[in-house]
Length: 116
Length: 266
Image (cartoon, rainbow over all chains, first blue to last red; front, top):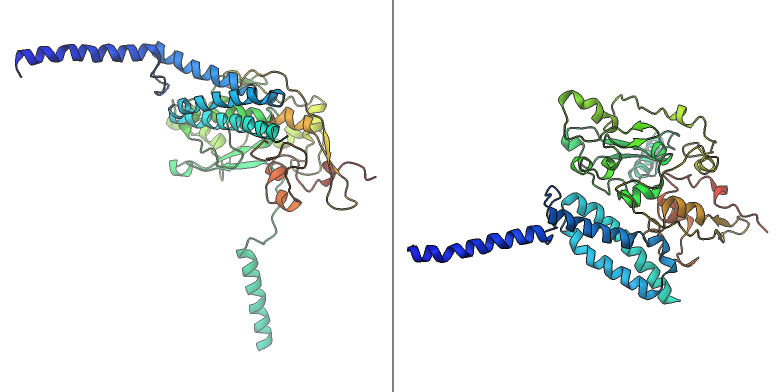
């Protein structure tokens, strides 16, 4: 490899490094196992958990919601699903089941309201 | 002589057939055995005895919802496929059994610790106890002697025990449970019995929602939200479906007919 070619490769390496750092601290890589504790990832984890808790803490009020409100909650569950599926094995198992219970109830109430 | 031999062969054949189909009379569990669950997804493969879980001790302290909704335990034995690593990470049994949680003034022992040493087997045996001579920390008779008596199951009327304030099942676990609004209690309602002369069922929505929440029963166990929408028979229930999911193995058993069929016949 000539010196010129080597020089051409260097910026690519720095760009790659920069990209990795940006991803790491932006929280976009929040799907890795929870033993990672970089600030961006920790934030992303809290983010989905807060969203999960906000949606699924409402199940016991499901009967009081309108069909549009129920549809919106179900859509939020569907958005959470791929995030949870990318978590580590244990969290995926625990939160996958919890999300399923929550979504199923919301769908169940929605269907029963639409049948009326 | 030939006739006797023929009858003997016939009896043996019938008995064999009955046993092969599981038609032998089922032994009713003793009060301390009622609600016992043996978990053996990975235990024996890992060289440990299967884990024995007693519902009576845990149900006296926690609601069904806390464990089966918030912690995420499946309703079927072995359905959760709990691994030691799950417990070590603070999930399933490890949500409470982490050596830090305090229940009734006592620190709850740690399950499946990462810092296991060879002579720490006694701690493993507290749960992995099937077939081992392990003295439990809580003695069933001593624990239940102060509780109101029930006719079947654990021999305890758990509902009355809670009404009398003798047990206070916890419904929230910090770091695991979600903060919820207080539950709007649905009214109790009557379900008509199919047999003439049989008292109707009074279904206590209040009791069921306080202990179970909504999503534990709907829609997985009861698919219809409207009264009478889910059609089921006593045979279905005795086969472990609908009410039978809980009322065969953990909650008061089906043979206690009057607990459900309680509406006076007009």
